[in-house]
Length: 116
Image (cartoon, rainbow, N blue to C red):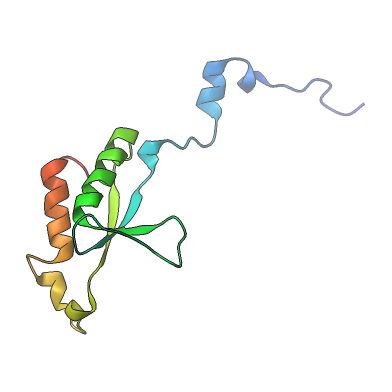
């Protein structure tokens, strides 16, 4: 017979101990939603290289953000998809107060002030 004769599993005895000793718990509060933002109104453009993912106009982004808040997701990572006419080597559009990203952030902060 090998040592030990009994397998000690005191850590699995009751629910409290199991909860205390478990390794990983993933909740909506641990997630960050990713969204691609495009110009326009009431637009949802599928991203060909990413099935199930779409570029959303700011008004549609508001709806997505509200759904995330309701689901308990605490943050949204925005990626702008500016038109070809505004891209430049010096990223000038990033400093434009009326740029796509800046407008999207203002709208989201107005609608959901304490959200990241």
